Amino acid sequence: MSPLLLLLVLAVIQGLAEFLPISSSGHLVLAGQLLPGGEKLPDGVGVEILLHLGTLFAVFIHYRTRIARLVTNLLSKSLAGSEQRDYLFKLIIATIPAVLAGLFIFDTASPFFKSTDVVACGLIFTSLVLLSSKLIREPGSLVTADAEQPISLSKAILIGIAQAIAILPGISRSGSTIVMARHLKINAQQAEDFSFLMAIPVIIGAAVHKLPQLDLEKGLGLSAIEISVALLLSCVVGLIALHVLHRVLQKRRLHLFAPYCLAVAIIVLLTTH
Image (cartoon, rainbow, N blue to C red; front, side, top):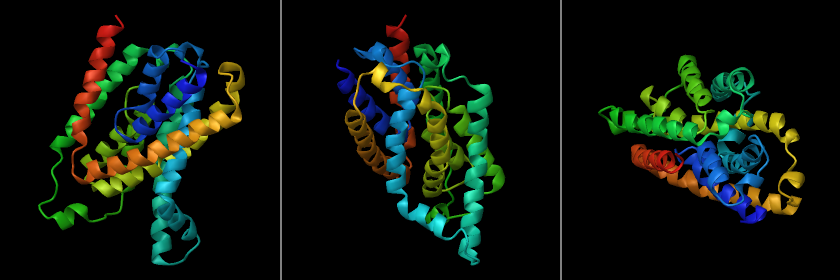
């Protein structure tokens, strides 16, 4: 497989798995290990972070209205301004566990983060997390179930811890944070919004930290135009995946992804030993 084709395949995988609860990091590790030409990828998670930028653009596009509302109300003295500042504060607090874990706990450049066994275990964990969403009981009134409630600081921290744990390959960030939020009685739409908005500073921070260490010209021999095409592809696929996830969440069917994660984990364990 040529380096360009490999990167395009990885872009599609990233676009789908970043938003669907199946772990983009885990699938990128598996692709790099199992696809022809994967051995040509640079060491570490630089390519993963690069492709994350494509899906980050998808988040900006999908949530452009919400982000604009957050920014424009920051200096407002109105009640809406106060609410948006409070929301932004909790988003920032929620990112702290992942930042601390990334800097002081997890060494993402270690062989541990390239292990297919680790990915398989992470996918099994993800399947259990997704299955646990079946235990969530909605309020009796549909109006109450969909009503927007302020997210408390303690809930924001717990969702942030779920995001930090999802640094491990195979553990879905979107699945972990959304299911955590749902168990905390946060409605589906709020859980979805908070999960992806809180990812923005984490992805930007990881990119600033990791991308200077990545030499794609040397590692893959690709031009800036080819890399840009891959980023655009991951963005477009990501927008489609966001739409699909939204529909799944509204129908309360997040658990339907659990069998897939478990099946992939079993196949990996059986074929790599």
